[in-house]
Amino acid sequence: MFDRLELLIGDEIKKLNTARILLIGVGGVGGYVFECLVRSGILNITVIDGDCFEISNCNRQIYATSNSLNKPKVDIAKLRAKKINSKCMVSIKQMVLNGDNIGEIDLKLYDYIIDACDDVTVKISLIKYAKDYKLKLISCMGTANKKNPSLFKITTLDKTFNDGLAKKIRTSLPKRYLNTKVLWSSEVPINKKGLGTFCALPMAAGAFIAQYVINELLK
Image (cartoon, rainbow, N blue to C red; front, side):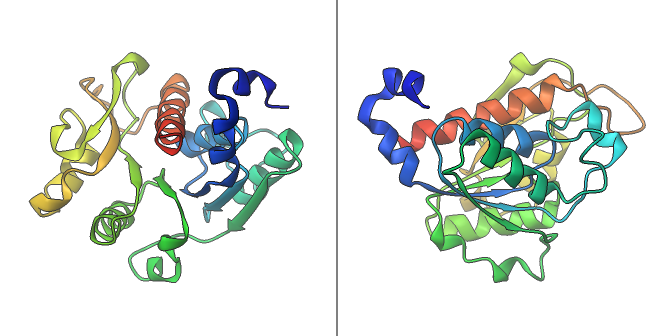
């Protein structure tokens, strides 16, 4: 089923088949990351998310539909993966990560960790742990109140600007952690009272992150 991908990367697809990925958050950005990974031959994915789908998710989250409302996001993601590729092994943990329980996850088991959650404390903890134990991590910064997906880029955290979430994380960390890879947008945020979101933004962000991780695994 991955013939078209093999035309691009040949036998290197075996690296993707055997990689172990941890995805934290399978909502807006995380849902599109997950979709890309499954459709790229990743067979071993652990997904952590404690939320259920709500009606407000339907404008931007790929697995939010009238049939998935009030159902756990991790359950719907696993069903989706099996429909795409029955060989995909998805381990799910329905839990909300926080500063108290993050230690329950053995992060050293994974070849790559993808942070697509929205909890600042968890993001900071992941960055610190990954740096201290030399684990591979990419963290998604803010995608709300922006409209131009072409302004997304992946750099180290210290190079971010026009991103309130990145600034909050950047200023909370010692300098030695600022070389963490992050996905962010240089677009000036639209001044809104709430967190407005255009579906193309999490879609593009998820694709960018998945592409980056896949290329890293193929090195």
